Length: 110
Image 1 (cartoon, rainbow, N blue to C red):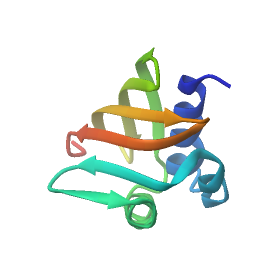
Image 2: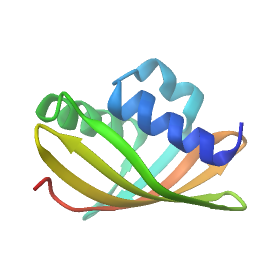
Image 3: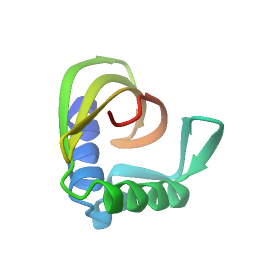
Image 4: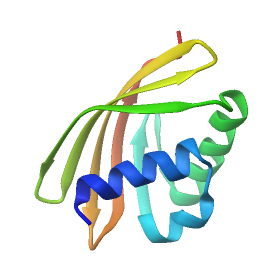
């Protein structure tokens, strides 16, 4: 599986479907996410996923563009939910087939 495919699976299976059983397979134990004002651990990420899924239960994710360079994958994304849309740019660092680190910038749902 390519790094791009790993990142796509993570977005679809964890964020859209809420399948937390895939986290062990797709994220490293020491995963760090960088977005907003603070870094977050894998456990904090799952809390955020729960929050967004509760507020946007019919989420749909489009990968508009995706580029891979070494262990980094850059994705330009669009999420639809309840007639609203948000756009994001994620940079994911994939190590040994799992996402170890991410940097993310997202707009608010409008």
